Length: 534
Image 1: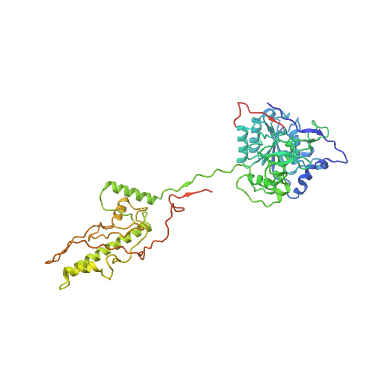
Image 2 (image 1 turned 60 degrees about the vertical axis):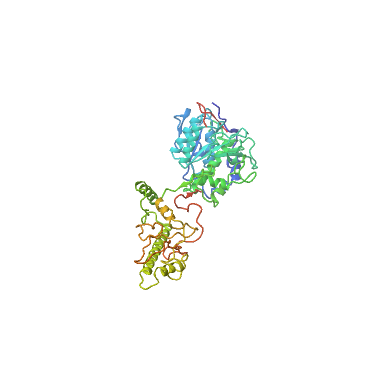
């Protein structure tokens, strides 16, 4: 169990020449008086999870709410503070500044005292975790943790802090006071505002712990505050350490929550991060984070809202969305498969209207109809020529067929019945496999040659006619040459009512259609490590 060091280093005498307020150099360094013209922390509750808060101090009169004690502080109500550390932090946050006393950063805020060890030693991570949960459950808007530990894997404390985040609570913690490149729990937990220290001239405080988790910096050198009379005869002391810096940042959080009561915790944190004043290189660094906390900038700045705390890692990208299959297409495919297996060799079955029929299928139907009309015309013409009394007879009829089709078009030209569609192929959503096979045997695929002309005079209902030579029908008394009927090519233009758009076919699924994809866009040991006081 590691002791927590008290941050009080020297007693401060109150003299007529230098009031306590005048010795609070950090107020001018942060522009707190100007910030009080915008907000004072009204309506905000700041939980001080620490050694307790002495509610008898005049500097905190009317500011301390009923609290609790956990661990070895059970039964204290959170208002017994033998070490003075918790009282010193509470005064920096919400000191009323009356009668020459300590003025806090948010003097109108309320303090919720949660004692996790009345003598300032013996803090455990388990007790701190319990205290954080209790504070969240009792109305805290901000949780101040002016304490640290050497531990970095703290599942119990991490869960408690995450519980605070889930309830829209801002958590602030110190980086530590050993001057090491190490930030322990709870400051290293993602989402916590980890606070390092600065000196009166704005330089990084030499004894402040540093590291990548550092978020902000605030004064940490000889910061004057109030303490219990048991700790100082005057009731005041100057403290060093990131504990004090943490309390000052918690006060600024209270100001922001007071001025913007509808702002969620993520955007409160974002305002502090965006408005911070760089002390070293631009951007975030391991010694001062995003820079010195800036109360006026956080209250006045026009800062765009965010949907996630800037201290949390980015959300992982969502997996590519797979569109659900179109029920109409699925039913058509299943119907085709069922019909094909139940009746092999049966006539092709086309999709019914509304059952996945689209432009491609309609174009196929138009072409099939054109071919049927052409076949019927040729058969009628042949019979007419053969039956014409005193006419040219068989020879003339066949000559006419060989030479020029009715209308003056050669056999390889346009067939009667109007232009056919030269659009996409006929296999597609909603068509069965047997339909595609029948069509490809009697019609062209896109970009290919013209289909062979079906010549049967009895087409199967509901589909294109089978291709093959037409049986000859000789007139009485004549002989018909045994020769195939010349093939008629399909017309080159689209049918008037079934025009297919020109242009390249997309190489992948259409956006929003079936098959499209969318983008989205510490384990500790059996006993918890002890904390140490910054």
